[in-house]
Length: 360
Ligand SMILES: *Cc1c(COP(=O)(O)O)cnc(C)c1O
Image (cartoon, rainbow, N blue to C red):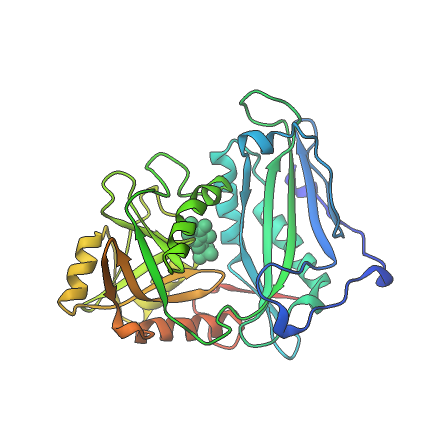
């Protein structure tokens, strides 16, 4: 039945189109393009009203279930454009497959991944003039699904909106590729086994705000989350996955239910392995990290995610102690991974894993 689904395209009139912001003012998530993708689900019709249409507001009843019970999931991905106009998406089906896993976890409807990937290409192609070309810039793409039925009582909504908006974003590292200072939290936790830490559900981010504020007040950029049970094992940094280089091994926590399976994480593992790096997906305690820092075995730490690709960690703070990493400098492996991933994402390097999808 999904084979029959087709998208209709309603273009915004030329006169209604927005002015494009200057490339050096983009920042992150401040501007939105002229169009959006949207579709609606209910039991009778399944997915319907599938449209690429002018970017617009929608109204929701104050009782819409998303406001009360948090049935909301999202994704984050990017389109890249070269000076010659070629555009690329990076592993888009992996994002949509992950979104379907998030949907299943929150009792929301799944959608056809292949169709969605085609519709996304059509949407990005329509918005091609919005995809910036300056080094490090891209079009950030935000698929979102919410439960909209107006009703109280905890149960799955009967109607859902799925939409995609897009935002031109500037280089994440405006002042160069700078290592961050990270605050290790042993009070709050991000995710517990059996919970929703392994899916991209909106409530996870609301739950992280308090600790992020504590970290910022103390002068740190991000939080390193430890496991919810013992407050010992490293899990994630902010909304990124974490990697450590200890001795000659690249170590990242395993996907055992509390960690979001990052597409950048998976790409880093595959690239590093293809270079002959020993990659271990295993638990790593904060004590082991600090011990490795003290005895000189801890060479690098970096976070991975779509927004920054690779974010080197220059310092970890825990209670009253501060642990420098690689003298606060960018590590060799972090730099090499960053360069190579960027080159692949922009279609400039060989793509042995077939990650890149050309648009138009
Ligand atoms: C989105 C996200 C990541 C990174 O995933 P990518 O697919 O690499 O962008 C990591 N951790 C959390 C908690 C996330 O929400």
